[in-house]
Length: 398
Length: 221
Image 1 (cartoon, one colour):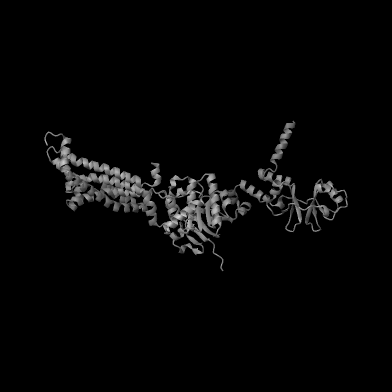
Image 2 (cartoon, one colour; image 1 turned 180 degrees about the vertical axis):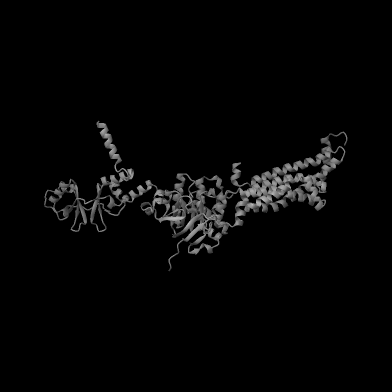
């Protein structure tokens, strides 16, 4: 069976407005079924133009757009729009229609029977957790957030598989916005709809999108997952759009165990004996040793508690060591590392590679350095707080 | 009728000629309404047209404005030269005078519909016709109604003059009064119902206009 065509595809699409203003120039983009894609960029960057070309509100001046494999050029624009949900920033509920009529506007255009429309309205209003009585009210009787909930379900009412959203939550207060973002994400995940959203809010894009498409001056600058965009911004423009604060945060969150760990931990071979272990501990001033075999595989841990009750220096380590309670692969991210250290109160965590070779160790103090970097940054002044403390100390001594 | 005061004479006249006055009242109203209805049939589509094609706004509104500036007596007389004596001349005069308020209000009403509603309607897949019938007209009907109300009140006044060209109506009674010696009571019997008709029409259509206002506008009032 042939693979399903992408939900939406742009092939060399351009849009030049009468008068010569180039809004979008030669863009190529594939949007898969069930994806949540956010267009972000400066105003006038072409993101709204790109969005509005998908449902034929704007006609491209060059190239082809396909929806579900069909060139939209060959589809009646009215039919196309009825099959694509549309949510706009100013909500755009019809002020003279009840909430019920607003929700079921597209089903009505599609000539669904009245009973089916009513049932649909009830089902949908339940989904956004608004009371059924609201169906008989008018938009002006609802708050902005409630109105936009209706705006969102209106875009779902006729089982549209694609939903276009043009800065849908831009005019809402932060709390309402967050609630609606959760709602939209849930709808996308539960109902498998493809959502294409224009936003100017980077946090919104990072939170919601499976893929972020960054546009500037009619071109796609970067098209990647939020993680990739954060860790590898394509250029200065993208980095500026993300902002230094988020970049630093992302850098820290994406640090791997290998980057944080102290390499060359104090270790001991499993076939050595208690006396060797004590010597090692004494020499390096540590209270535990990583136990390894011939190939440097981590096989256990030996700590002071185990040694305390043993009096015979000839005992083989292999018989005394205990199992490694928790270890971390070297490519794991910071989040995975902080959990055992902070939540479960381990003093240290050994780091191993895929084959369980001992690579290093992450201690609580290593974590402090990381958090320190996240708070103060490392770029300009590596240790401002320390220097400051020193200065203060010196000042106090005088 | 000697010895009776003006008001006693007035009531006496109404008492004896009640049916006649009522008949003229109805006739007067009908002539006014016909003219305005015809104007609505022509004016509303014209209003829609100029809200779609703004370059037509200038010429169409100018013509309607010029018509409006012709004094009603002159208009009625000129029309009489073409159409002869009778109701039809007054109906046409009413039609012409009603065009301007109806065209203007239709265009203004349609232009006042929020672009957001239009964008939403179009984006949801409405045809141009559906957009007009389901969105634009319902949202501007109260403004259009205001134009019709205005036109009808003016038409009732113009119809009163229509008697000069042989149309019936309450104007007939007024002229009868001006021709009679001491005809003050008769003049009143024609003039007061005319005024009453204008006031009641204005009030009733005002109420209709309010009922037709979209929900948001109603709430704001």
